[in-house]
Image (tube, rainbow over all chains, first blue to last red; front, side):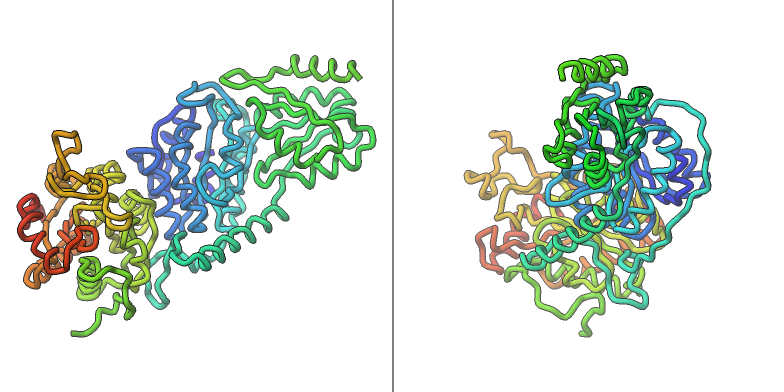
Length: 337
Length: 242
């Protein structure tokens, strides 16, 4: 993910030590210097995200990375970045919570990532890779999406993806160039630019919020991403994301079980899921599996909207759902019928 | 005197007798006299000067409360040839933002900080600030700030930061009298020049009137600085390593 950011033209990285993502920080300290770009080890998570706010305000590609407790500390800055309409990348290599929790893998920050986390009506685009290759590709895509929509993008990975080694191809990145007339570069030959989220007047702030909502509607329309396998004719549609989706892949060898893997968690791929549910006349139920005690399942239920039953199995706090136990649970569910 | 190009020709929302209007003008005159308007990126605070960008005519970035110097660090590192300064009050700089302040100074960032010390939180109605004087009454120290009640002592931010090798220049000035206003502008210019010469972190602390919160007339407020604040916060150069 760090190399992908370098390849994508990231000019500024700020981060604070936290497990399980220290590899990104140490890699960036070396690579950014090689490229004569900026690396800052910040005094805190709060400072890191605000340094990213400043760098992004000048129009360069900027990022920070952390893990769950650190991401909680960044929420203030993320709300400001969203309010100021600044593009940037935030990587969250999720660990187990709540509180200091532990350093084991988890998917317990889904709500925080897709429902806001900070204050105010805002969204980030949230993308969840299930392999090292996809993590690389999505980082590059994240910078492009961020610039296109002037929005912060979060990669929501977990300690499995964060600590995993596997072969991959360093694909040549496709960089989307977006002109940034709004950037703070100095007033030479133009009027002064101001990067702000604040308005003393309610009407102005309302208009600003409507602009944000318009952008979110466009993103919802265009940027749903999901993968499915054996989903068109299955009896049970298993829905999982990130490394848990990867772990559950062998279940789709059973013709009765299909897989649906959201890649964009915000926007949640509801139209894609609804199409699968609507067009599959044999579908008995959707079965959601997460390394949490039930977070994404709420978005699945909203999308499915009662068309078929939605079941859930999850574990968190460092424990993760195992392939065999999910296989047995689905078998038991089908037997009951 | 010609109006500074960096200062917009609009009225401000500041109360009568407030020091912000004076300091805004000094900052803009300093920017213009150094010919740096087109290179300037300022960071507006959270506090009474939150909409400083409505008065300044150069590029400005918003920062969350206390985070001005972290935002400034991000800007300066990717735009090292720009003039980058924060404009922050005592609560912003020395209470909620103390970590960002100390560490930006300690890294020796080539950034200048214009620090408005009015010994209170103005925008929120006059609560105790880290710089509130011992015995000073505020809406959250109705009996007067008391070290015995563990309300602490006024923090001398400029002296504190001067201990750090990354700080090249620290001066305390005041805007309660015309002669001192001229000195204040000199200090701000000196800080900006130090930054342009990449000497490290510079801070100009400005003692500034807040008659509304102090429950005083504007003349009484200038007297308060002269007779009370300057005893605790003496004027002058605290550090100069230029």
